[in-house]
Image (tube, rainbow over all chains, first blue to last red; front, side, top):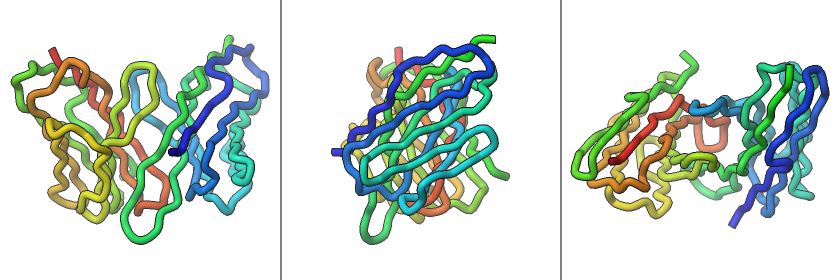
Length: 116
Length: 112
């Protein structure tokens, strides 16, 4: 059974710092990996999707990398801002054969606080 | 239209009530999902619909009954729930099974 772990569980840094969030997964047979942010009591906002054949994806100040063979992904946030404060979730989608869809397996998230 | 909508935003129900959660998307996505998220926990998959057919049921109790009336709509019918079923229920969709999943804002359910 796939297990996804995120480190650290919580992080508090001053505004302007660059930071790295880590995600690891036990089964490297994944179709893709997706990073989300979740504000308290809200739904999930998709940040980046990395297909299993890709090494990284970038969107604005965010960069996500994927090393499928070692079961690791990182989310790099540049020049952090107070508005970046949220919980960041990593999720993997398993490989499947045949038709149909499959759900995501999530890590427990990193709770990020950016201090003004 | 690039969003998933869910109604209601909040729902309070008794253990003998019957209620339904609704999810809608107009992005032409053919896969739709229900997840359950307890407080301070990650979302957990409940059901997956692919091309309007139920493809995955993660051993969810029968008091939860999903329905996909058409390619844009997904319902979750609730009956005889327990207080431990109180959670945030999230709907998601994707173009097909392998693409990026987009989530709705969720329905906050409280069972008394």
